[in-house]
Length: 235
Image (cartoon, rainbow, N blue to C red; front, side):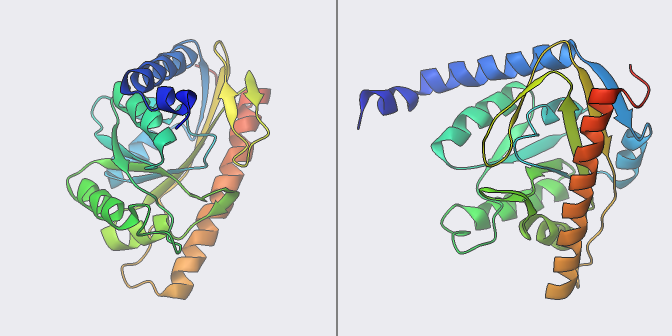
């Protein structure tokens, strides 16, 4: 193993990176000016609580700040070694982590998907929000079936959400990662609820998957529009 790989696997370094990233995101949030649509989204969530919060990968870094003090929440984080830094950052910001893959493909079991799915179910049953990215791994803007299966099995609704900042650095990565910058106008666009029947068959699950994918794409476009053009009330 190379020295650089051993260094990155150092727990102390992972904690330092995770905490630094969390505090940087806190700075972005604290210095932001917000445009939120719809204005009553928290009232909607309160009626359906606990909910499943869905986001696109690469646009999710500010999501922990959506949680209000009265909310309990956990986020699904990959079991890949890079995921440990994300889990540390999330915990530092008050959101516990569920480790595993939300993908329902051939490597579902190998990436801890079964145990993660069970933990997400129990988390919802215990009255906590579950947040996760909806993308199929390494395929941007294509929702997988895992999240709609979770909604079907739990009976809890999906609330899609998108966040964008007008000051950002956009990376040329598979998930179109946006590095949010401080002192930005922050656009938040959300909708819901999307319920999936416990009796949903393969066709119904696919319909729900497509609905979620279309809605996340619509919300992402709207969030960037709100951030870049201030098409709403800034707070």
